[in-house]
Image (tube, rainbow, N blue to C red; front, side, top):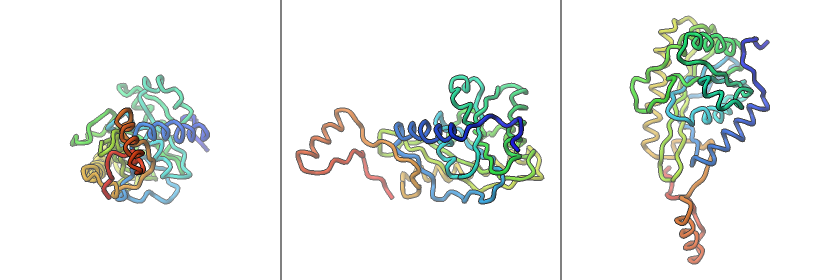
Length: 259
């Protein structure tokens, strides 16, 4: 039975936000969302999953919504700053709750609601574990201790590190890149030990993703979503015109993807 502390959530509304809002926005504003082929296999049982993410950009919650499809059959939840939730109130019915990130009360609410979510099978809780925006090159990652203390409260389940990066390759719009790391089993460790273990795993996953991003090799990734190509405006009009008069098909992409 769902706990009374579990945040409200509508399956229909979550799916709408995931597919139409988050998916639509990423398609419109990114060249692609790509998942690294070297990603670790996700847990195949019904145990709850705490997804611990780095926090490089404003795009992160949108990416998380779309990547939730990688865990079919799970109910997904997330947390953001309470002030931001007021601006994006539509997220409340999608399993997102807000906390004051600078108070003890907010920390307590994070732990209590997170535990209520993760005490239930086939539930996933997605957390930007750094707690604030941070460059993907920053080391150490300096995760907030709350993610480790939440993990330490749980007797079963997994922590899955998720590394994300936004970068530009050959197109005008950015590449949204992601990689899942090896799952960490829960149970029997202190909050401090779990924070250190999660940070080490997320750092290793992000290091791997950084190398894939630097390669600019689309062949290292599986496309999850494809967005727009081309520069637009007069430049693309001229390219289309030239293609027409020379009898060649028009290719809006700026450059070929390496693979």
